[in-house]
View 1: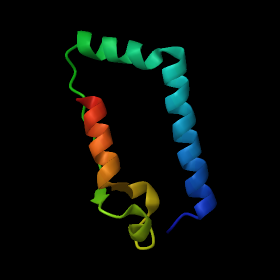
View 2: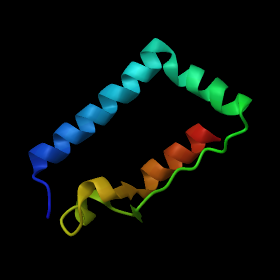
View 3: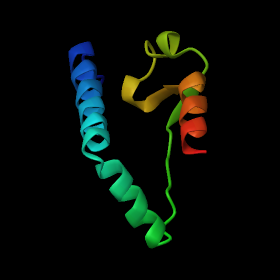
View 4: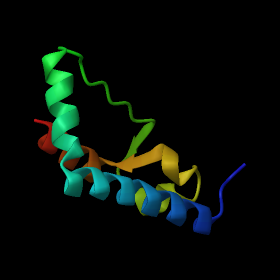
Length: 79
């Protein structure tokens, strides 16, 4: 079942809000320190990497997609 555009927009807004809250409070750094101190690997999974996100959204559920450009930005950030 595909989600409506409003549901997708709200989900992205919620994820962005949580990420911003973690950053603004410094909790993201604390999580990073705790993760490093326990030598726990960070595992990130992506469902489907596409060249053109806007064109691919029509055939798939948007939360399952990530553009190649965004993936590259994520990898640069993690590196």
